[in-house]
Image (tube, rainbow, N blue to C red; front, side):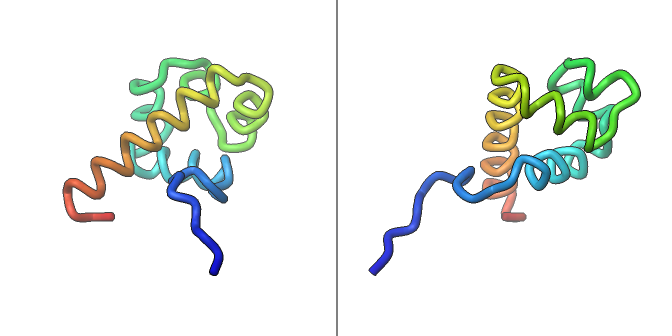
Length: 80
């Protein structure tokens, strides 16, 4: 029997995480207020943000941390 990973990020693609965060915060403007990085605040797009996040470990870590927070909030609010 295979054991599933308990890590919520396991198997989750960065583009899916980013799209979910953009949706949760009502667009890049809301996401940029949570994580103030240029790829979210200055002419943002999914593709340009992904390029930056794939090259920049600290920014990707912030996005993943925010995603885990959002998952906890959704679960707490019964929308998960």
